[in-house]
Length: 321
Image 1: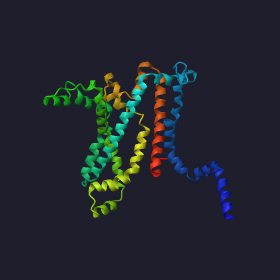
Image 2: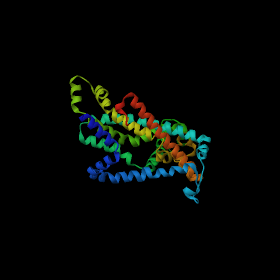
Image 3: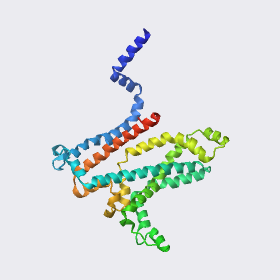
Image 4: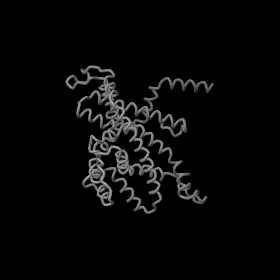
């Protein structure tokens, strides 16, 4: 009898989700009040701009406005994919961002493991600060650093090659070299930030596990492979899934400033973000640029779902949702 009453109460509560939400809102009003500014920012900057996605399906005319412009259906997408640019920018974006994710993850974990073994707290602070500093440097400044290294006439790299009796390289006229150059530059600038996150995860691991492993005769490499990496895997998977979610969103500053917007390098450095920018800058075709942006966001969303499903198949506990 009691179980029947409990079941009836549960069904009644389930049938009144609105009332349950209001009770929760009333009992936790101060928590909701604290979260209100963050929710407002997310709504204004993340959800409200989604209204602009209709521009991808319109033949937008500034004089007519968004509502007055004629519907174009999928014409903007047809124009985008009828050119070779769509496949080129898609490949470049996926390929280069995949390199960035792999090198950034491996580099961040490796540096975190090494810094974790430093016992002098002043040295730890120095290493962390020196590696974290490039993250705050503007891409415009970084582009000058790269140019001072790779300039054909006065670059340090070509001067070094000349001193070794080798021919100088016209770096800004060699598109095939730039995937490696951009990967190195991106790693230099961002690996410190990633290492700090992984280092925080390592510091949260119980020290008694390492003590027990040391007593059993495990060396540092065995401790890293048997304790650190397995316990760090949830963090690695979470950060990787988040990075995959933005794999279609290239770092505009890196691809535009570091390459000096050199047209001779477009075959390997032109990505979706720079393509959209140039489409707006030179042609003024807002509809096509919006179509490229929508394609970028939609495919990125599908990749997150597919990656999360893949992780869930292997280990459901490691999935994000």
